[in-house]
Image (cartoon, rainbow, N blue to C red; front, side):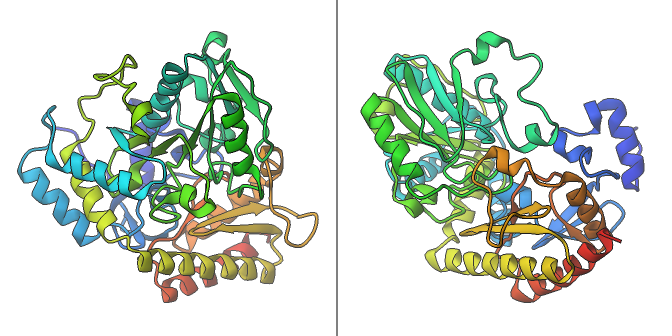
Amino acid sequence: MIEPRSTNADLFEAAQRVIPGGVNSPVRAFGSVGGTPYFVARAEGPYVIDVEGRRHLDFVQSYGAIILGHAHPAVTDAIAKAAADGTSYGAPTQREVLLAELIAEAAPGVQQVRLVSSGTEATMTAVRLARGYTGRPRIVKFAGCYHGHADALLAAGGSGVATLGLSGSAGVPPSAVADTVVAPYNEVPELDDRVAAVVVEPVAANMGLVPPAPGFLEGLRAACDDAGALLIFDEVITGFRLGRGGAAERFGVTPDISCFGKVIGGGLPIGALGARSEIMETLAPTGAVYQAGTLSGNPLATAAGLAALDLLTPAAYAELEARAGQFADGLRAALTRSDFDAAVVQVGTLVGLYCGPVAEPGWIPVDYDDARTTDEQAYARLHAELLKRGVAFAPGAYEAIFVSLAHSPDIIDEALAQIADAAAASQA
């Protein structure tokens, strides 16, 4: 019998013997912030509780997927009821049809949807679909945008790739990225008749948080139209978080293909891509572009997604954006009071933090080169001091900060007081 461990240190030591680096996603190893990862035993509302019983006010929220807060009763009840009927069938279910209908109704430009099991699968399939539909080989992406760990999209990725200081990944041969072109974010590239698609995070949320410059998304739309290429919005983070229609609705630019992630499953493993029917019908079984997955449309994930999205009304999004604004404004003020050099960025319900001196008041990053000027050591010191005070930010300087509907105004004020104290202590 395998004995349970009661401390984070014991668990991490055991994990490193049986899991590479002791974690199943690299940033969780705390390599860039130092210290021992906390191992979550359970979560509730805005909190995660580790195996030692310590409660952390959580601003990770499964990297944006948990909009309602952890263990929301509507979501857990839906999962429990679905699980009682079985956990996986390898056959169609009614709920996957309902979820696809909901996405098609909400997302601009989407008429048909293919459910998959992760955001990586969604973007990987979107690229294959674009190539199959256009008959062209080339993909254009932007430095610092992370689209999952598919070979062709790892070039100059943000998020964990940026945290590890990698430009790509070992094991990805030159041939896998030979048709991937990397352009600076917020600059519209020149396209030719070899380009199948331009894939972009409409709000870059994997190099901290970089908003699209005025005219950038509109310029991409026009450039794709002129070149006969498809525009792919990776809305794995922004979809159903910036609003029901995601970034496409917020910025008024309709892509050809949209990709979604775990938000549509209430935090459970799921993803989706959607487009107009003539594009989607290029996918098997109606077309020649192959994609499949036994767990696609999983009954637990679709049950959780339908329950979560049902509660995300316009009023809920307005409240979420107000709380993100309260947090962003308060974070800016708390760091200023503590003489902690930083820039705070807000785009709707998303918040980003860049550590280090800024050139002028109001400065925000516009591309990956700007984003990489963040002081990772200063962030690491702040992260450590926050954890001592029961506040959990992501263990990497290139992740966004996520507020949920469970973060009440009082809880946000409580967190801001701890952040001010932690910022001051981190410089001592």
